[in-house]
Each structure stands twice: as structure tokens, then as C-alpha cells.
Amino acid sequence: MMTIQQLLQCFEQGGALAYSGEPVTQLQHAWQCARLARQAGASEALQLAAWLHDVGHLMTDLEGSPTERGIDDAHEELAARVLLPLFGPAVAEPVRLHVQAKRYLVSHKPGYAQSLSADSVRSLALQGGPMSEAECTQFAMLPAAREAQRLRVWDDLAKDGELPWPSEELVLAELEALMGRCLGAAEGPPA
Image 1: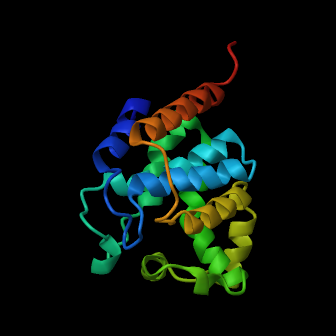
Image 2 (image 1 turned 180 degrees about the vertical axis):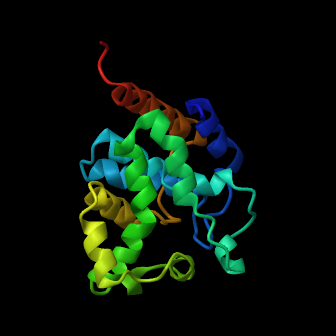
């Protein structure tokens, strides 16, 4: 099981890496995604899911953009396995389902596929492509399907290379504080 400090270290060590063909770093993308969630009035758990949805990319030993080599790194599953024992399903499930949400939205939302970046299009093919109607029906019934779709939309928008942002130290302090609050919420009230 990972700790909050180990999750922060993922961003300290890999946050400056380019976000697969986008004009932002991994840390900028995570911060922008969480910022969009906060602006949308999302719960703190969903804001944290937005922060950490791609942390699985930073946990693999794969360099560059794996999709360019035809590799699906299954980052969403890796991250969800780490996040579940720390923060519970309110954080882990939207993270686990954000890739499936992309597949769902491509099938279900007109024009969505055309809004995807080149890397998202490459990864879509590796992740199973658009969902069938039966898959869409199953996905829509999952308890975290709505949150995963919201997360996915923020994920797609969080690639603004021109957006000013605070220092890395302030950003990581913001993430650490949110993780601390969500850790307490996942543990529940004292017995």
C-alpha cells in the first residue's frame, strides 16, 4: 500500500515530464484537471480523483508516450488499486473508470470523438475503441459512471499550455492538503 508521501513523490519525480504530446507537464495536467473539478463544484473526493486520475502513468517504468509504441499502460487500473485502500471508492472508482468513460462518450456523445487529442485517439484504439451499445448500457449502470464522465471531460480540457499556474511547491502543498482531508473522510468518523 502506498502512502500520501509516496504519491507526492510520484509527482515530485515525474511531474515535470511532458504529458504525452500535449503542451503541459504531468503535474500541470493534474492541477488543471483538479482546478476544473473545483470550479464545477465537485466534491473533494472527485477533485482528488481529478488530481490523481493519471498518477498510474508515473508508476510505470515506461518512458515517453507508450501509445506511440502500441502499448496501453492500464494506468487507470494501477492508480485505482493504489487509491482504493487510501481514499475509498469515491476517489478510486472515477479514476478506474475514466478510460471507460472516454469509450462511452465516444459512442454516446455526438462530436466527442472529434474533440480528442491525437494521443487520446491513439489510446482509445488500444483501450478497446468505442463501446458497443451493450457496453454503454452496462457502463451507465455503474455507481461511479456519472463521476467518471465528469472527470473525463475535465481530463480532456486540462491541457492548456498557456494557463498560468502557481509554483510546483504550492501545487504539491494543495494536493497534499486535499489528500489529507480525503484520507480522513475515507476512514470515516471515529467509533
